[in-house]
Length: 388
Ligand code: TRP
Image 1: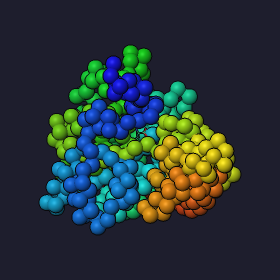
Image 2 (image 1 turned 135 degrees about the vertical axis):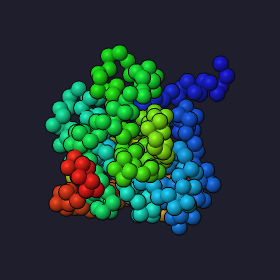
Image 3 (image 1 turned 180 degrees about the horizontal axis):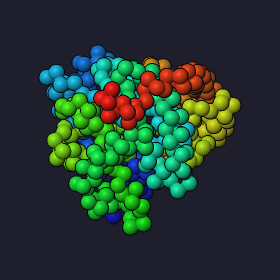
Image 4 (image 1 turned 120 degrees about the horizontal axis):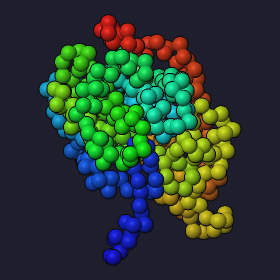
């Protein structure tokens, strides 16, 4: 076995919609999933329409896509698109979840388009043995507060729970489901014979919002789905089926996972210390950041002498992904780190301050959102009366 293959074996990783394991090689994921890299040409097009590039784009945090060029060509012809994204409401929201939502909000502002936001309370019920349908439904509404807190346009944002509007979604999902075989689902998601029927069916529910506005408005409308790359298998299937129903294939744009505060892996709601939740009080955040994995040396003296390694440091990744969007400032911090001019304690302290101040504001807006829920939530009655 040559050296390269050896490396590959050591770097085994798994990415499915329900599981992310190991250190993810995003270049290889693009190959495996068959998506496309966001090239300079695509960035140039985006810059032309938006006037500036979001740090998520400059830093390749959004790194991959399907059919963006087609979407922009339609846009140039005056064929406006809508945005679609979602959340599996299995618990509280953490910072990893809101990364794609922050980007979605930016896209909504720049393109002044509608956003359809799916809360898959059905999915989380099917996939989590411990959660009741009442619980996932409740989390759908709790998580909606986090979405609203990010400042989406109430006139153009439609949030719905699958369960609430199942009467409207079901006939559409049925049309999708009829065109997907069990063997496709098995091959795409790795589901086995012990999967329950809901799990097998679910991907058809996630496909529907990609053409729901077209159904409602009775005309074909292009769709762009911003999402973390693990959701791509759903949309790979959706893209095969939706044209057969007479609608455009949805385009999509994909981000990496926000790493956890522990070594390796993504921020995971099931490993509580590895994730910062939007509802965390400051002392909890402090504890989590304090215990985070860094690229520091064993002693202060060694660190001053040899410097630390930001490339493996979870704290650095938080600055990079969310908390230091000024490139110059980030570069200075990086130089200090590698040069041994800053110790991990001090660096954590600075991040902590930024995270706590973000969360304080977010939590205030999140509570205020309780009174605004009805401006954002779409009901079955809204849909059948055409009141959307
Ligand atoms: N399945 C997603 C999750 O578990 C939720 C979801 C539904 C979604 N529709 C989406 C995510 C569209 C991204 C884009 O979180």
